[in-house]
Length: 226
Image (tube, rainbow, N blue to C red):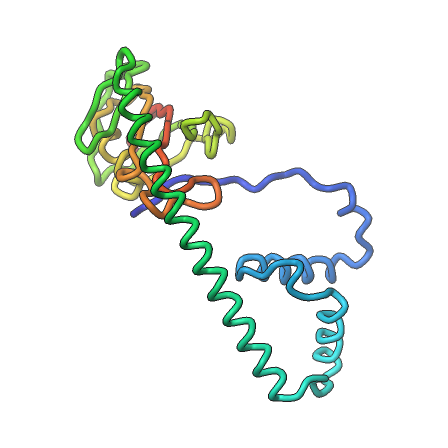
């Protein structure tokens, strides 16, 4: 499924960053650490001292302090550990997905009773905030929009409004709920969209901000067809 949600990196800096003497070393360490996190390692898996020793030996082009057999054994342990963590993560996601699916269905059922709510194919709910007078885009068109995306608890996960810059993208490249709505909207329109999981990110979600089977709430203003 095509995605459109865009995130902007934070600009806040910790005061400690200005106190880093070896900025190159810090950059390398932070990059490696971030890579470890993405691979599933945790801070308790190893000691900084042990890693420093291995790093120094490698940079000094020394022979490893561990035998080939020990190195192979460690590799096997790492593989088994990561497989276990991945399985646990998948099981938790599946469990959360079932719970969210029930919550989403109930939420949409209640939302459908709200005054002004209409429904399109696939269960996409919407409310017209302002009706435009321009043309409606096709799936092949590129559009400029302003939007704010929230979860049903009100938490904002993405907003072009907050960034102060409209988003531009091909209609056919975004999530299905947006594709359906945009082709019904006219330039100048502003709609509230209530998108069921099946027309958004489904059972996989879009971690870390959007969980599995989450309803997404958007305020969308169609600014122009490019």
